[in-house]
Length: 172
Image (cartoon, rainbow, N blue to C red; front, side, top):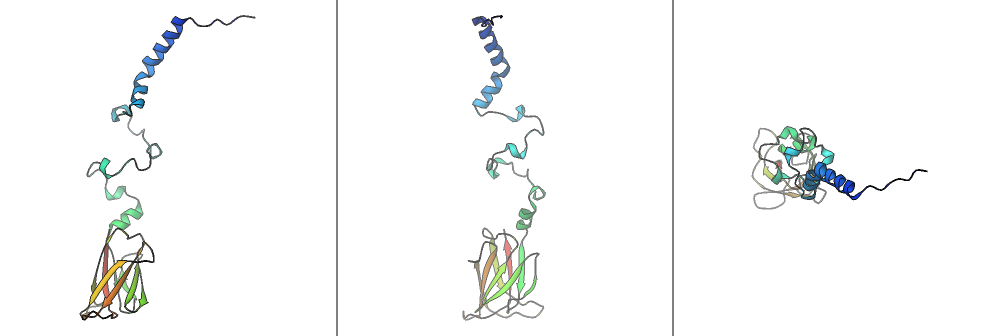
């Protein structure tokens, strides 16, 4: 039976030196969290390689992302959404996916295809056709029914609840 000889100290030192010489730069880059774009070949970083939340608007150069780069639901949310609603809560016309309902006592619920929680709402009393819609007041706010809905409340010019047609625009 042949006995395996242990390597001499000089062979161990030489092996460690070769290891450090061939991987030391990469190990230092990883240890210092300093991998730069010059270290990465084009097309090598994939979505799975990026930690969730690691890329945000502060880390993306202005103008480097277009609307076409966004997910379809996000693109849809960036377009103004709108509805023209009758005094009875029937939707006269609207942007795609919008519904309207009369909740009673001059309260209306308008629902959109995406969350409108962080959007701006603007409503005005207005006819659904070409005739004059009359005077009145309107309020709009986030609905307690969920993030895709807003509540619209209409009043007459004196401030009393009054069923009125209205136009609503939501911009996100």
